Length: 336
Length: 271
Image (spheres, rainbow over the protein chains, first blue to last red):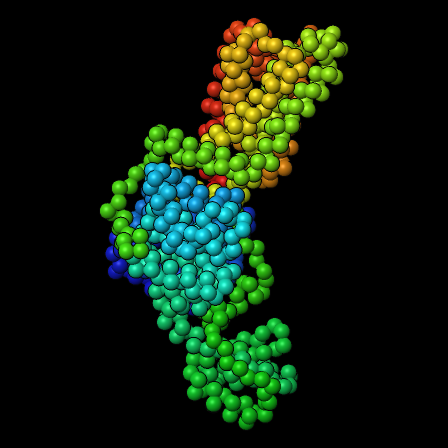
């Protein structure tokens, strides 16, 4: 089930920006993070992919010294997050899911205060703030209080604040959730540029497409565990590029149709809760012809047929053989 | 910065701890943030402006005749009492606001920065001394308007004011502690009032202790608020610095010595 986990035994530890071993965090009786291992190579973009409540935010918070792990250990560039927390903080920038900037202050004031806290002089702080505001296209809004900022502007300011010290490792917790496509693309460009300049980026996302666009490697996380790890291509190969959706005219023959789908395409299928639609990964489009012929021969009449690009659900289906947590029940988001 | 490359970790100067000078600097920056916030939302100064005016008027005219024969004679008794009560009550707000502030995302950033852990707390508390100063100035001004002419002179009044501000700052660490460990801002308010209300009223702030039952007199005597009130009275009314002044400062030191570390520890644990 864990066919992509690559232990990377031969890897030099100095190359690792993040090295986590068996991280565990328990909130009450909810094991939010349940033994997560991560290896992030310096200079790469690493995507942590999973649904709401999978443990992504909690994992990032532990790596960023914001939360103590109940078990396991993590190293950032070789420094232990528990023992050398203050050193780790000098090497990271964190941009949270909820903008970690001061609402009642202006963009400039926020950046100046963070710069001052990081040890820059008054003049340097002002200059740095101006520089970052310009870089992130916020100069015009510099003096406005953040209350009047749009979601995208706030995210950009948040990211700008994380870059003051030019940290070699940047954590981005769902950097594009809630952004419109244009601002999302801008954010992606920024992230790519950061890596080009030598940073390492660890980002979480709910969207496969985002991980696809950006990440060199991906860890799929569910119920606090890494259920798959590998390059984007590894993952894609496992689920096929697209998935097939079939509706049957006569619901009685649903299970029969499902058997045929699984036999002909040689994959696992699923039935959606609403409307009894069969979904199956489509690794090889050519086989669909065989499938349709077999269905016709078996006398099963189709109502609708569609092909969809893979979603996170299908990744999960393919990897874990079960639906994502967000499908079966809405789990409480772990923020603590 | 778009052309610069990012320095690798091993090329950086990394320090394991923040030193004392940096801690002070960080705290002052955080205090600057607190002042900016007050400047942005001046309506939060309502309580410190109105409370001294209303309470001073109210208590002086209600109790004045009954306790000291007339309002004029009561002023030297009540103004120090009201001053201590008002300013210390103001320090509850520190805890409440800290709780509200900590729930916001920006505190995550503070925690993830390589700064002194105490700075976000110390800074918030430091910024709030501006509130105590406003309350102090207004209470004395009200007293003056109503006819109080402190015999200790202006210098002694200033010293008395500073003493109250310092002690309230120390006490605000207690409420900051409640702020850090509580779940909601309103529960901070609740617990703090519960602690403070008996403390300020079971003191010599409003009436002389002699008419109280024995047990109460004993409590009033050991109540640190009484010592602070007495110290302020001695300063404003005769310009003398006595044992109560010393006790108040010792008390303030002890409170900070106990509550500052446990508050910072609780703050870090909640992380």
